[in-house]
Length: 483
Image (cartoon, rainbow, N blue to C red):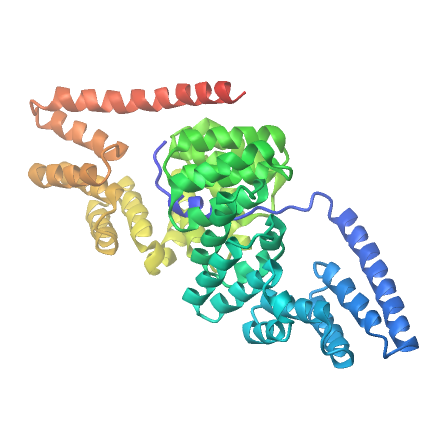
């Protein structure tokens, strides 16, 4: 399957989580009930405070209540901080009030107020793991990385350390954006044999972000047998790492397992389809992305990927509705209009293709591809001068555009400039040794010039075609092993 479109972009989009609400009306009704229950409970807590406004426990309970419902109310953290603020006016030494104030400020990236609250805790409390982990986050958030790592070392050596101390503080640690600190903490927890699947997953994720892909995969693999949460999420993490390692067969293995345990997850089908693209498994990519679209029809990235695969099938115009959906949902992304133009080109709607590609040619991000397709349109219409001009502009925008070089070689062959044609085609193959258009065009050049290398080039073309067929057979073997 020739990959003309920006599948590298699709791969990046594949790292995004595809979220779907299967029944919007049911979800809305459930949300309304939860909001009513939350509001009723809030009124009861407020009534208790009105009845006895000087009772510290009432503010402590209200603060806890808001923390528990932070996912339902965007303002809940601020409300909790306000409740703890009143508590600390009534009881300035209240340990839980001080700790929760420090914790909540850290969770929203307010490092100085968090640090100030920790400093007010008694010395013995400040030396406990729960306080030390917040201190490390505060220091990292304030840019004091070396002090944060020193605090982490003391924390990891603490005899009372438990896994929950780190996991409970994870929102604050992640807010600090210090992967070196996270690595020190979770690798230390692992060395002390205190890491469950949840902590091993965090270790694997941070190793991956730091580019330690082998270690990332090893940690995530160790998490699988004891994972108590959704297994598909962990398998997706593993698939992402395998993908970055260019182990596409391994990624498919993880994704096939994830598909078995979570068949209604559109992200699994989406990512499965993209991995198939990398292995030139067009039919399998098509079927998987078709399922993803059915599960997440309003996700623009799923529609884009489905269009990109459909464009290379027997009826390329099938891709047009998917790219139209992407353009509708992401009108400011020039890639959508470019892809729609390419789909119209493959569907032989040259006028419609021009209408989309000409604006795309004026945008640096899509200029090379747009000029490339405009050149092919001109060649199809036998306007070889315009075709040559458009391909030259494509290569000016991107000198490493292998398909444009292959097209230039074809145009040079037609013009009888055989030496230049061979140079262009060899340059295309140097950039992409399996480039199908360059391989075909070089074979055609050798046939026209009766070059003695013709048989060798024909053999290369046959091998390239056979490898595509073998890739499909290998895919079937992978799936059989996983099952």
